[in-house]
Image 1 (cartoon, rainbow, N blue to C red):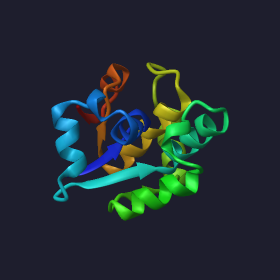
Image 2: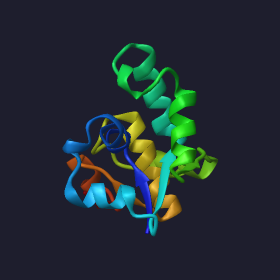
Image 3: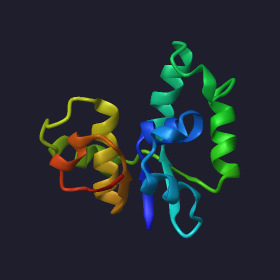
Amino acid sequence: MNVLMDSHALIWGTVEPDRLSRTAKQLLVDRMHTRIVSMVSLWEITIKMANGKLIPLGASIQDVVQALHSNGAQILPIRTVHFIRLESLPLHHRDPFDRLLIAQAIEEDLVILTDDAHFRRYPVKTIW
């Protein structure tokens, strides 16, 4: 399964693994699944690290990216088709980062690893 990690799943998996569901924990360690992190999440994490909200993640976003690569995660770039899909999404969810993740998941046919109930209002597969 190709799993797109929501930002909170990535953060909790790194600094607060007890907040993850049993299924989420299994997905993050099972190498049979492709773990994907969007540039959208890296952007959001960079902002949170810069304003001091995510100090435990590492010294810089470069540390986070290196850890992702070391653990076999793939980085999903933002493509024009993602914005085209985003434009057509209803405003069930107001968070711009999450909305772009939803658009990416739809366009790339990915399952999103998220605990956010708002995602279920869109035609996207979620797991937690």
